[in-house]
Image (cartoon, rainbow, N blue to C red):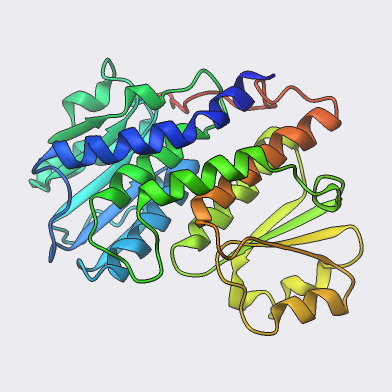
Length: 300
């Protein structure tokens, strides 16, 4: 088993611990009514997108999400949440330094307490039990989202994190369908908070397996992306499948993959497993993805 696959398997336990950690964290989490921005790079940005949509769905306040390099630092926010596994990503650290200079409170989520992010954020949640040896992020990203999700009130139609962990155990135990593992192309779709998960699923496939993947809001699928669907190609939907979409996929010969009753974060675990399976089928090492490093540190 690759190290990446081993880390994928630990996610249910990591999520349960994240619930406990969020309950004990205290004042650093966004408060209801605050105007919040969430930021990160790569996978962390996609988790930011998911959390921002969840927080607004929970009625806890306006919440935006930005890649750290594209953050509109002139905008007024009551609090900023930054997700950075390594704690060393240049764009995140630069942004937090600017925000500190403007007096904007910032919470950072990181896996390593011995990194520069500890000195530039006002509060830090250290999720070191979810750190990874792998370059490709899996368990830290979902654990960070589980931590933030656990700090929210109830969201209609969204399960508590503890139930998501049960669904993730099932996702780890069930075999992946051959029509999905043997496909030549995958399009990931989501609505609301699951759009961020769709983006992340596509990224995992590209990082680990060098696969042709795309990701869109589910209702945008018929506005162009369906043109590439056909035999040997998968349309993977996180959460509820929009009315009529299954018929559209079938009409053009594609394969629809959806687990509407499972928590979408658990379905992301399936997509992570798929990325490893496709990588290994191609003879790639998922622990050593091409052209990637654990953290992007830019020269000054």
